[in-house]
Length: 219
Image (cartoon, rainbow, N blue to C red; front, side, top):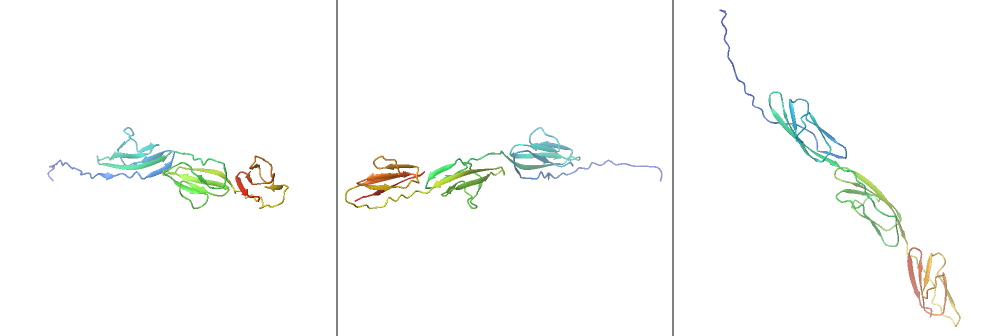
């Protein structure tokens, strides 16, 4: 060595390939907030809300959110996440339902959801029933929010009134008896007791929540 030195400057160019930031998701939940995290390895963060420049973004509304990051050598990456935050709701089946015969159709009046009825197999929005009972449904929307409701149903059987007959006799009267188990009685001439005295053509209407009628020819 003669003590001489030499130097040379070099310019190094980095070719940055865009990379993907994994924000997770999709996030689906009922109410509350979701915190998106781009990870700690970056120098800067720019979120799609236009104001957040930190590692995380907390959101409380449904939407698609994105972030652009830059590392210490100037390379950038981006990522997106879908968020579905539902609004809690309630449903009502109405009632109580009380009627004579027939059927009752129960409807929670909440569309575009899944339905689980207490009969164990109905999954449609409505349930039609023909017997007494307490019926319930659980409704779940696409954001996993759910609500339940129940309704009491009483369906009376139509009473069958037997007045007997035909009655054929010489003179006198005939006593028709609808029995005393009903609440209201309306005979064809307006009498409202359970028994009716007649000598001719007679009709009876009885009401036991529900109503029925029977026509008898007495001759």
